[in-house]
Image 1: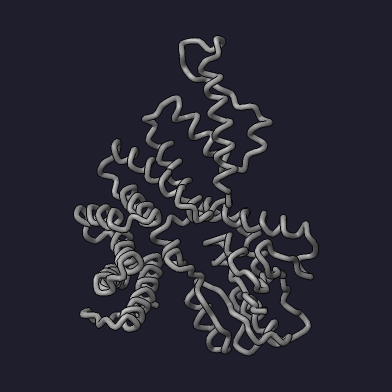
Image 2: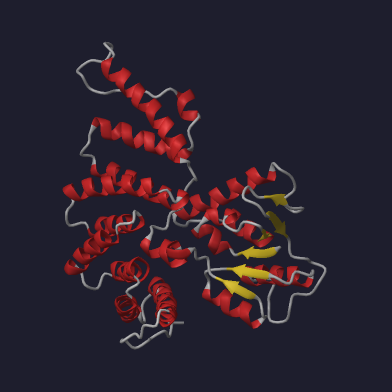
Length: 375
């Protein structure tokens, strides 16, 4: 059985990564749990804390099956196991017990020494990747086709939420719609306005994301031009699309992003997200069209340039156009801040893969390759 060791940054980018390695033994180093626990009280992005809590919630639910240290079965096959770092053995040379990344890597080496001959360390951290390679540990980034790690970070908003089957959501919304109808028709409501208190028993049966949708819809029922609430709803549908893979969520996100743009036609961030929703809804041409509108007003918008490269690459297999976009992103992000450096590295990685794909397709790129990264 293949063994996969997950780094903390992978789980914080995508809590669902716990369930994306069927028929494999998924190893969570105990250090990862400590890092997740620290997020509860640290002053970081609230969404980062949310994703940390989501990972903890998923692990807690899995622990109901048995000991996480001993290993538990995963829903789609395989097993998950939390592995502590052995304290009665010396750290491998070059690694420090004071460094959390080193402790995670040490656990991977420890598992290898236990007899595992097919181990992969999954990380999105360049330093971890390079260090692991020096110990001959096989490394891969958390990528899943077009929705790979770079896509989640730059095409897709950096949010991850709950997996909610669309059927369950539809039932919940149908019940909610019935409540609204009864509320509107009720003779006890004065002035014809919708004023509704959703029974707590009903709310308690919904997941947190369903409750948020319910709240947003109630607010929009009262004021359909509440642009901030509509944008929040569009963003939530966007996130659910990432979690479920259901294209119906893309259509719901598109619907509300388009309404937001009717009220905020110059909001390039919303238009960029609308373009990504088109892309993940299978409308590559519309995605390119909307992204081109963004770049017409701001040619150096990094995210839009990066996204356009992905659209050309994954949507059209136009490797020449894709390579040109990633080259531009490399120029825009060279020598920037920490975030720009990460974008630079991802653009370089994407460009390298585009060159490989082009070569496999028998196409020769007409642009020079600039894959050096900023340290």
